[in-house]
Image (cartoon, rainbow, N blue to C red; front, top):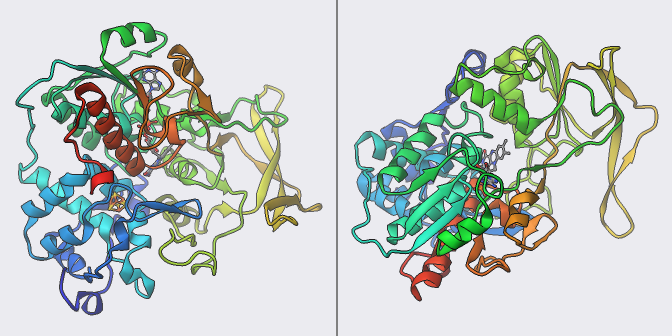
Length: 498
Ligand SMILES: Cc1cc2nc3c(=O)[nH]c(=O)nc-3n(C[C@H](O)[C@H](O)[C@H](O)COP(=O)(O)OP(=O)(O)OC[C@H]3O[C@@H](n4cnc5c(N)ncnc54)[C@H](O)[C@@H]3O)c2cc1C
Ligand code: SF4
């Protein structure tokens, strides 16, 4: 339970962030893990509340509240406080295949529903999670777990993001022979090409992939299923197939001037930038290099924030981020009470960096782009906007209204569209004849079967663009169902029997 009076004795402390003005000159992770001592005092703040809401893992008003993989948070907080690191690691690994990813980049819905957070700053759960797993690797406690028996059953997993990797890990440990097909040149999905290096070092991703390979999982890279290898071949060659192909179908902004050189999708920008970072031989298109440019990021979410941090490191002249919604309140609003995810104003790592570099918060709220304008060579030169007002209509639905007279013109040579994703990419789903609704595969959570015999689906391809922790949840859960389908029973853990 931590220390009985820990939540009164100690202040909340988060991991040390490097100086923003220093870190924008490199691509290393922006924060350093806790020391042993700090982790212990922070673990001591866990108050043994009796009914820990930190791991309820559910949606409240459209946002996740509590940990979706039901991490045994109070147990490992207590073990960390007592210095029992190895035991803490064992408890952590019971529910989370990849704490080194969530400990770094999870938005920590557990902290929003921590009981201490009712009237005090929450326990720093995420940073403690990272500390436990990083220590596990440092101490050599994480070793390949080679399954002692093989069932003779073969499973193909399409897509190597966190959902595919979690499913592969579970099914491999159950003794099945698992092959992961990935169209990119490296495994990891958005962990590798999406989330930038300064949030999640690619060596950390590679270390886990290496471990999974040592444990017997086969990775087939540079192979797009449905194009380089047919869906029928996969269906014939494997006893079961799991689609974990993500939800990376872009949402576009089809405005006047959209075809201008210099208007690109955020994902193209982030992917190419990481490819270049990982391989110096890769040439970054001039169009996608922010150096010396006025950059505008359209979209107020996390993908947009990752674009800001990337553009800063490339040496952008100026950066502005547009959001459609008004600025969030400083404190929880009446309709956003604990244990719901706190919808409050925050400065993300990228916003802190931009503020340090440019002297002010670079976000513009309640603003809408109306057109892109090019020079005589078809290159973007400016972007036009109008301010918006967010109100509710007579049915209580939010509507956005343009405010005449608020039109503005912004100089820009690079615009990055980061307004979310439509959902799953269709070609691979068509190749398998899998049915979809609103760009998501029709497969019920808790069953995960598609309409096609022995083909399952999990992760963003099923639920839409979400979080790594949900992808891990779905990977673990689909593994239970596939194991049961193959063997008639399963002993794999499931949130359903926790
Ligand atoms: C820029 C960005 C930043 C994000 N930051 C965070 C964050 O900080 N924290 C967080 O919790 N979540 C974050 N997310 C969301 C999170 O990354 C996703 O929810 C998660 O990665 C989904 O996992 P997945 O395995 O379902 O799919 P993905 O990670 O999308 O992986 C799908 C994989 O399938 C492969 N694939 C697709 N089609 C085929 C095919 N036909 N053949 C072979 N392979 C194929 C793709 O190449 C890809 O590697 C972020 C998302 C984006 C876009
Ligand atoms: S995975 Fe995310 S929600 Fe779960 S304990 Fe870790 S930081 Fe919290």
